[in-house]
Image (cartoon, rainbow, N blue to C red; front, top):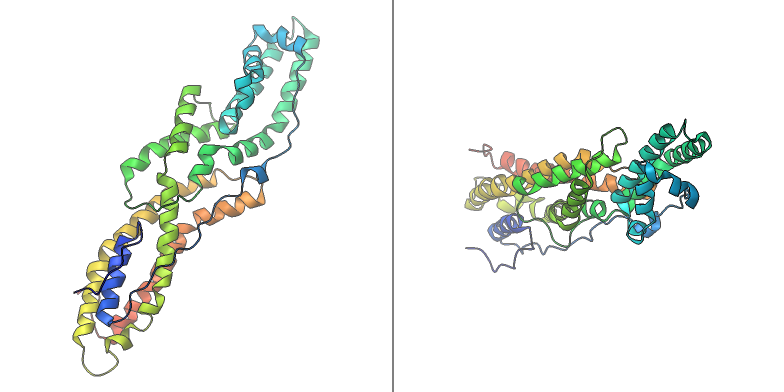
Length: 321
């Protein structure tokens, strides 16, 4: 029978059950899990860039009404257009740059002077695109959501829930890749809304963070298993037999299945997160923290298992038998 149990920390029920069984078998106090502060991305305000504005005169803008750039300029200058930010704003930046270049070609014979000014504006805009891309990434609500840690961990990984988020991220990355064709505006808006409102990825990062912290805090419980189980003296005590079964049935079973599912999904997400890199050091540092979470969980798990491997050797158990 288990000793008096404290409620499992949210999202950590498998580890909690396992460690309480180990503690009970060893007649030791269960580990009282202490949450570790989550890491969060640097604030959007701290990452905001001062980017030169490309101004087109009102007269030239009116003359462009007949080509693709005209409606885009009017939309950007509207009250709603001025509120656009993040990837959606970059979407319009790409559209406008391409439209200005097209307009310059169309006006070449009809109005060479205007065509020259428009081409200059297009070239100036093109040179700003790397800065605008950085601004889009660091200021976008959807992107900040998928690289943040949620206020609670993911309780159960579910590939069917993650699948549409991959699709949404592919749409987002199309916009950020200047060599890729743009999605439609409705497709982009739908993708951004999904990524902004869905907490699954943020909960996955939190789950990796919390599981790593919990396993790390279990080290005092398992660091002297052989001695505490009585395997360093003659014979194999019943306590050691029970511990062996706890490891096989609880850690090698539900705990490792849960951890494997978390790290597998994190590995799937890694190329998407890396594609959101920018030249900003604070942003780069945060992304490195995020993509390292799965390897950190794997490393701390291997370290934890090594204590059990020593226990199996000292007690002369055959692993898995």
